[in-house]
Length: 261
Image (cartoon, rainbow, N blue to C red; front, side, top):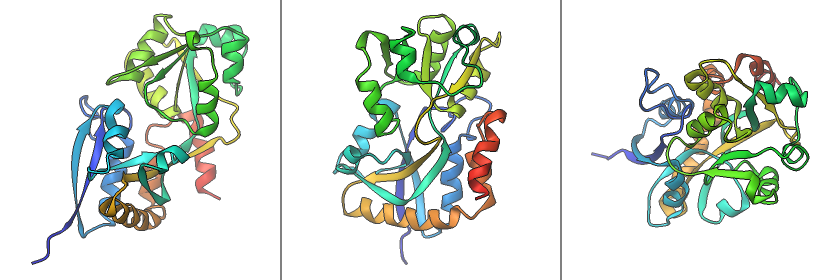
């Protein structure tokens, strides 16, 4: 009797990609994607291991481990330690900032794409980000070159949720994340509808993530198998629904235009 091949996915407590506790438990974008992928990998058994978001990359990069993560930026640095899928796993809109409506009004940035460097250097705003996150080479480089005293890095679990509370309490001025993340946390903590979000004027308005596995023989084999499955997943209508599951209504047409090409 042959034993099913196994993949152990790292799960992180980072809504809305993984929703582990509230009434929407199991409805996270990445959870739903993994479930969809499993239907295209019938020879595999999927297991799950929970880690804090701040430890996920460290554990994945350990060559002695056998883990995979469903959605990561594929950066040159990470490729040294992680085996990535060739096919993208997730597709969405690029980074945005959440800020208070009064600040957005004062800056005159409603419905406009804004420049992050200008917010920090010209307008002297403080930006909050979760620890150990990559937003792609372009934005990562920009963040590295911003004045340290104006960048608040929040470690630990539920970092973006904490930053959203800090934003409401005016302890930071803007926080960096993705549209679906800001939307989810606004629903949960912005009881007085004080927050909004605007897009950044990055070169690309669309972002793709890739599956990444521990960089050893098994991990490279798993990444290749996941990549093969993803080629079929992309053709499944449920994939489109999953990618837009937590996207704010005003941003959905932009993502839909990508799928319609």
